Length: 138
Image (cartoon, rainbow, N blue to C red):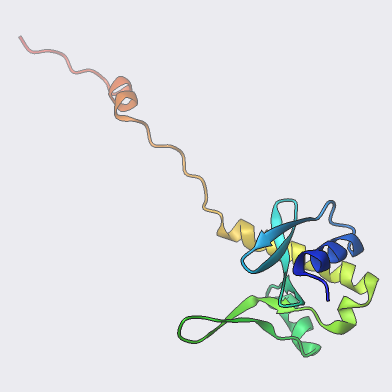
């Protein structure tokens, strides 16, 4: 049996169309990252792909389940990552299509999560310089 890293490297080789895919440590497994966006991870011998609401239906139609781990008090379900169905995993072209879709879902989620940059408030010094000066009373 291969390690999570070996399996992730194999998947990274098999998918193209995303540009370079790097493999990084991710908790007890390994994440797959393209364009600084993590779109998948390998844990417990399974490949999990990032999903959005529309893409989730494709996973569920094939009987795939979301990622679940044991928390301190109960099982925790991460519904934004689903286990890749075997039919997809062993079909090179289908795996590539699903990886591209997963990357799109991850990139979109990242954009929604990033805070909008506000215009920096002027410092007190800048405010004082910009404020009109009052005439002195004599």
